[in-house]
Length: 485
Image (cartoon, rainbow, N blue to C red; front, side, top):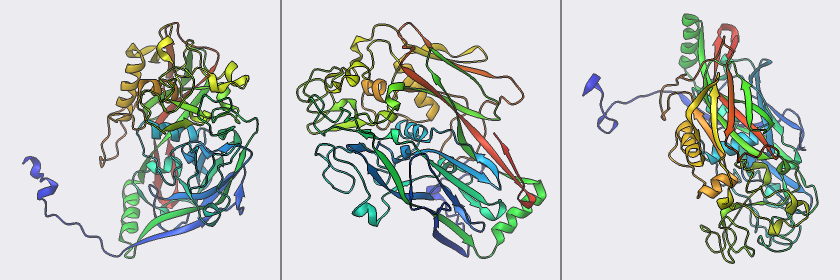
C-alpha cells in the first residue's frame, strides 16, 4: 500500500474528542414582528459564543396567502428575494435579489437536494401540504390556520452560508453576524382560476384576474451548534491566528447580471476565483404575477386539447401516468429563447385562452439556436452548443451525472433550460477545500454568453447570468476581517 494508506474498511484508527456538547437554540427575529409582507425583511443576530453549524441551521416559518386562487411556487425558497449577511457591519454575502432563482437552479441542476417536506418541492393543485382540499374555484393554498397556525411548516437554508468551509465556525472569533432575509414580491405567486386540467375553458393554467399576496409568519432561526468545555479548540485556533496572522474560511456566492435578451449578455468580473458561469432565460411576461400555472412538458395527464409537446393527447403526455399533474409557477420557468415555436405567453394568455395555447411543441423549431461563451473574445467551448451539448456541459460544470427532476428533452427546453461552463477543477465530497477557479483580479476580463444561429428570440426574454465565485474570509486577531471575492 502506497504511503502507508489503509482502506477505511480495514482501519482500526480511532479519533476521540472529549467534552463535546451539542446544542440547538431558537433565535427570534430582531425586527420584532410576527408577520412580514412582500418586500419586507427579517433579521437575525447570531450568538457570539458557540461553534455554529451553518450547513444544518435553518429559518423556519409558516405562510399565509391571501387573494383568490393563490398558489405557492415550487421550492419555498422562492418566497425570498435575497439573503444578506454582515459581520461587524462588513458585508460577507451580497444580496442580488435572485435568491429564489438561484435556489431553483441549484435544485433543478442537482447541486443540492430540496427537502420534499419543509421545502415545498412541488406546486400543489389538488390539496395543500397538510391535506386541505383546494380544488374549488378560486381556492387558496394558505397555511394561516390549522397546522400552519400551530406550527412552523417550512424551512430555508441560510443562503450561501450553507456552503461555508469549514462546516463548523467558532463565532467567538468573529464580530457580531447578522443574517437578513429579504422577502420576495407578491408576483412569485400564481393565481389559478380552477383546478380543472388544462384544456377546459377555465383551468389551473388560466389566470383568475386577482393579485394574491402572502406573509411570512412567525419566522425563527433554529441554530445548531457545538461547544467544547475544555476550550482547547478555541485556544488552538487563536494560537494558529497568532502564528500565521489569520485563518481562512471559504464559501460560494453568486454575482448576477440581468438584462433584456437581445442575443448576447456581456459583463465584466474581477474575482479571485470564478468557479463557473451559468446562463438561463425567463419570459418577461411571466414575471408580472397573478398568472395561472405552467404545465411541465410531457408530464401532465388527462389534457383535453391537442396542444403539442406530448401534452396534447386526450389522455396523457408521453411520460405522464394517469392522474399525474405537474406544473410550475411562472416565476421559476427557465426556457430556451426560441423564435419558433413562439412561447406560450402572448395572445393566448392575454385573451384568457391559456387552456388552448400551444406549449412545448419543439418539433416546429424552424432554425438553429445554439449557445457559446467567450472570455476576452476567446470562445469557450470552441464549438456552438445545441440543446444536448448545453445539457452535458451543465452536468460537467455542476459535477453531477444527470438532472434529478427532469424527464425529457422537451421538459429541459420548456421548463428548466440552462447552460453552465466550468472554470475550476471538479470537487468530491470530503475533499480539502480548494480554490482552483479562474482568477481575474488585476485584469480587465470581459465575458459574454451569446446565441449562435437565426432561431434566437430577441424580444420576449430576460437573460440572467450567474457567476459563482469562491469567496475567502480571512479572520485575524481582534476579530479583524478581510473578504476576498
